[in-house]
Length: 297
Image 1: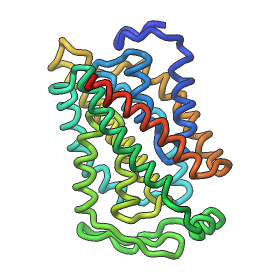
Image 2: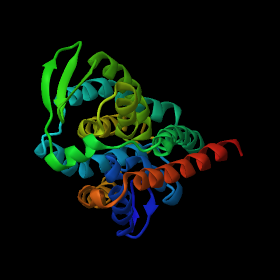
Image 3: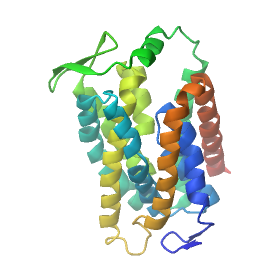
Image 4: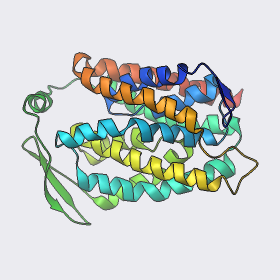
């Protein structure tokens, strides 16, 4: 099957099948899978034009809503954090999309940037995987009782909330700053930024993963919508480049991702967390090393 916009020729079943496989496992770690789907498009399908970033964000738009709905239904959507993520990330996404088209249209340079982003994500996963396992009393307790998030304070300077009988807090200004930088990287890469921002919230801000995943997914969804619109608008300014998303290819990826994210979330409890992190870490660092080393050869 030929996709005229991207120039990709592949069996129609391959994009949704690959997206399903990636999303099934990455959803267990609270990530849509877009950060691994893009290397597949670049290296396997040979899709290296700037529009590949927009197509990757289109995948997020189609695949994420089911996971977001699940977090909302379970009462684990931390809305003040979600708003901060969206407000901080959106300006960065616009800047990132412009940088991708203006300065990184060359496939070699773009692969090097992708390698750096994946290397960062991989090292974060590696550190978390190698960290000695601590008794997860709160996590097991939360899994049994299904606690909900209860916001006790929300202001421009400080947000506090209670989850599983513990009080947590963060500064929205810090979140804005982090998300702005993440938005630039996500806009260039075409992932929305969720795979990058979640480790920051857990390791630096000190928030529990149970309350971070929903906000990261929702932020990724909103910023991906904005990213696709912005890429589509910029396409008129760069008629010599393929800038707007390949809608048919992106929708096929998204359909597979929708099923993968849903089933991955359902099957998460049957897989050890360390196995999931180790698997993701190996995949990410392999692709990162391939792209970074290839840039210098």
